[in-house]
Every structure is written in C-alpha cells, then in structure tokens.
Image 1 (cartoon, rainbow, N blue to C red):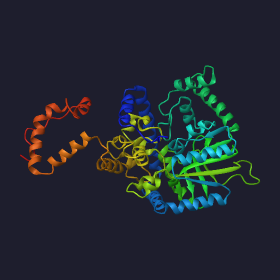
Image 2: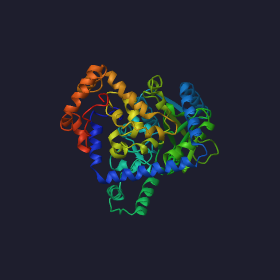
Image 3: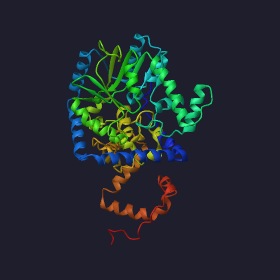
Image 4: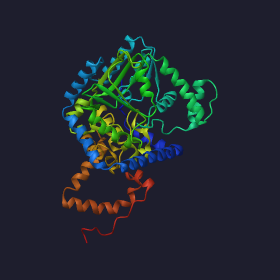
Length: 458
C-alpha cells in the first residue's frame, strides 16, 4: 500500500492551481484562516508571558525527545498496569494489522472514529473496510468529508472549504430525501445520524493528543464531545498514537494544554479535554471493557536519530497552517490527505521520503510566519530549507534544475565569472519573462529592470 503521505511530482502545483482558480475556495480559506489566526493572536495576548510559556513548552517537548524510548516504555507499562493493552507498530502496515485484528477478535461490524491524523497517516479506514467493518467518522467535518469521499484539508477545521449548500446536498444523498441548507436542520440531521452510530458501534477508535507516561492516560482534546462518546460507549476502545505524543507527567501536559487550544482556535481550553486511564473498572458507569493503545513508529525513530528531530515536538495545533500564505492560497488538498501547511510540508518528506514528496519542501515562501506562530518554537522555515538542501544532495531535484544551480554556483564563486554573468544578465533580461523559469514568475508580476551600471562599477 502506497503511503498516504507520498505525493507524485507536480501534484502540489496542479492542485494548488485548481484551488487558486476557485473563487469560493479562496474566500473560504481567507476567512477561516484569518479568523483562526486572529483568535490565536488575541488568546496569546491574554497570557501574562506567552514567550516564557512557549519556552517552557519547547523545553518539555525537546527534553522528552532526548529520552523518548524510555518515556514510551514507561507509558506502555503504565497503560498495562491499569488494564490496557499496548501494541507497538514499527510501520503503518503493522499498525493497520493491529487495529484490524483487535476489531476481528471483538466481532466488530461497525467502528466509530473521532478525528485522528495518525489513522489518516496509516491508511486505517480502507483497511477496516476491506475487512468488512463499517467505519464512520464522528467529527462533523470529517463525517461530511467522508460522505463526499474526500480527505481533511485542515487539522483543526477539516471541512474548511465546504458551504452549507454542499453539505445539504451530501446529507440529502445519504438521507434519501431533500435536506435544506438551514444550519439548524443540518445540525439536527448530523446529530440524529451520528447518535445512532455512537449507540451501535462495537469499537471506538480515537487518536491521542498526548499519552501521559506517569499515569498511562490518553489525553483527548475536542470541541464536539465525539471523542468522549467514542471512547466511552463502545465495548472496545482503540487509541492510535504516534510515539512522539508521549509526555512524561500530567504537570507537563497541563503546560502544553495552555498553548494547544489557544494556538488552534483561540480558546483558553477546548470544550472537552478528556483523560482516559485504563478500561472501565468495577463500579464505573461508562467506559470500554477493553482499552488498546497502538503506538506507531512508522519512521519516527529515523527522524529522532536525524537532524530534523525537532519536528517531532509538534503538538498538532495548526497555528502554522493559518499563518502560512502558501496554504491560504493553495488549500489543504494540495499537500495530500494527512497533514497540510508547513507542518505537512516537513512531515511528508520526512515520513514518506524526500523523493516521494519532492514538491512539499518548496511549498513555502520561507517568510518565517510558521515559525513565529508555532507554540513550541519549531523552526519550520529552517527545516524546509534544510529539506531542500537534502534533496539537492540526494539528487532528488530534476537534472535540469540541478545543472542550472551548479552552473550558477560555479559562475558566482569567482570574481571574473561573477562580473561576466551579471553583465550578461542585464543584456538578457528582456527575454527573462518570456523563456525559461522566468515565464511563470513574470505571469503574475512585473520584472524590474536592471540598472545600466552595476553598484560595483560605480
């Protein structure tokens, strides 16, 4: 199975071009990301010392990575000490197989899911459907996209580009009757359909915002409450978690929670912050009979050992997405079905391979807005530049591009050839907007004329 993180060469440019030409999508992206961006700034402004909090969060995340394997082991022991089962998956295939096998042993016919990027990453839904298990996304945005056969385009607002009329059309199709685009009717329809799923699902599947090593708790953060229902009503709860989501203590989780909601939606806390610690115990009224935690590696150990390990600090708030001028024009689908924006542009090549997501490191203006927005201070624009350098060293870029930059480097590394090349550039500038790579640049902007005399000549 091809990794969902892989992107064919040229796919980003094609998808982005289509989205730029879509006036409705452009308006939806501008309004939604602008609103979330503004809410984050306002929420950060309410904190007494946001920079000190960000620095503390950075230290927690990077310090955890220093001893990640030990923390994961502690977490696994704590989960099992409280009656849960832990499954370690080295690859996406192993993670899929683990979840499918859990569902088979449970005799599951229907699985209810809450929003989880980890399950998107491993391609879980198709694997469950191939095993004869109905999978229903219960996050409203994800449910809408599932009805349309689409993937999420934003980590916080997965259906950010959908209109009420488009949602009504999808609901009408599944209901077998006309459903109006009145928001109250759309809400009532979704609530009725999803309530039946919550009550009849044999297995509930969630992600994990954090796993707490000291207690074995799974921390789930949502604004709709579906994660709480998915993790408490079905007989079996499966949590799929990237290994880097482990945090040593509850005190440290509390620090990260102060930044997570503020950075994602501008809230002090999300509506529902749930800690799941083991399966239902005697005397408890809700909770699953079985709790399974699938800890996914899928390339993370390689990242941890490499120069880009700081990317594993990401807390999945989406702040970098809302700040990114490229995402706000290209839209989320251009990055693929898992992670979008700057975080996706870094994670995609790291997990899928430099050659299997070659366009993504170039999906950035390197303006640094993503780094400024990141609550845990990941230097995202530096990582994107590093990945471009890695691609050049690995020969991933097209031969024509590598040859052009090699000649440029050769010309500008010696004074004589530098002077000659800049003199020729002035003479050849009238052609720059009509031939070669300058055509795409000049299509949307005017190329300035070079001065008749160079600064060094003066």
